Length: 247
Image 1 (cartoon, rainbow, N blue to C red):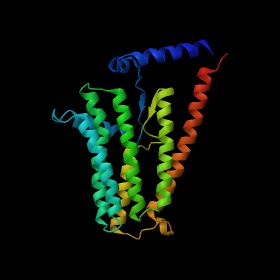
Image 2: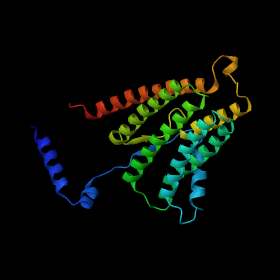
Image 3: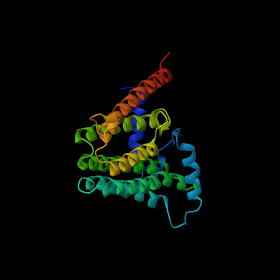
């Protein structure tokens, strides 16, 4: 066994013998550099800072995280309800807006008040995103406006891209929030636009073709996420290889 492995094992044993609180504090966590260069990023940042500075003190980042999570679940429920009543499409827009507020503002508020909890925030925020994404795509699959197989493909592609983003945050030190000028806010805007179009004209097809609006958009989203995954994987693999090549 290599010496480095012995040292690693020894440090693990030492960590296990520590009291839980001391063990937690002994774990180093480097907050990754956030890369957000989407179309709306600049205006969104100004708006979020303006709101954060005016929120009452009783509103905490945890409250906002909970708001975003519940709103995402209700957006999925609204899509499912749209199968029986088109008003569900408008209700989904409302909950997507609330989700944006909670999901985008929780970290901004924590930074504004200097109440950062990097490990807790990173873990909870992205578990919430994953579970919320399941409810959203599940609701879309039930809604009848999107083929369930496309909805499943979207969720799988989302999970695969998320894994790459989280691994890059740990190994490369950069946390990418947008790809090719598209981020979560742009996706919400596209969903809301599609909802409004279908609420007005339920039989809308893409450029007069046989493709429904959400089916076409879902296929584009799948291929887009897989392309982002492939490009990011190659880029980060080459970067890490060059950084750690033994000379």
